[in-house]
Image (tube, rainbow, N blue to C red; front, side):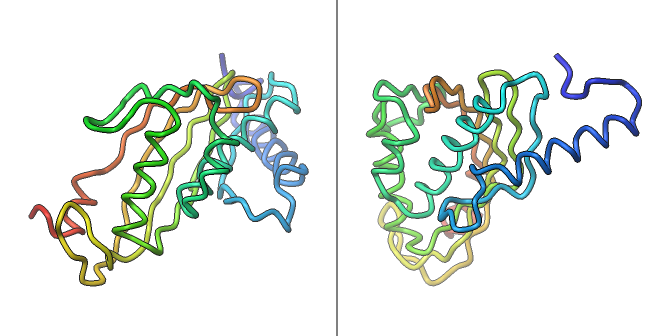
Length: 185
């Protein structure tokens, strides 16, 4: 399935621009909305507008959860039997896994921010290129932070069912994070 309805680059660019404008002005991106705002959104043109809005809203709730640590946002974004398909060792499966991970991150990096650099909506999937920033002023695995700047990326692939994330595949730049935390050189 192609994201662009025609092969000619000029039409593809026009379609992409019109899709971005349509998504940007939709209610899912209201100016007073406290949820994270993706910098760029690319949408599969064959999807119904309501489906696109549901999927984007779920992803935005989940991104905002990582910034705020608000468990209600995690529960609004994830289905009750949520599955982490790239579950790190020691993290519980289900909604409790991301909640525990968020608590750990907020204890280490109290001012952590999750920015959505790019978001692609294709079929029942949302691919999100995330950037996490903040300062290591707390503790992580027995190491006390000294105010180090934290800036690392992650890529998540969400499978969305009825407006909530059912499954997640994710890859974080943990080497960069651990270097910034001073845990590896």
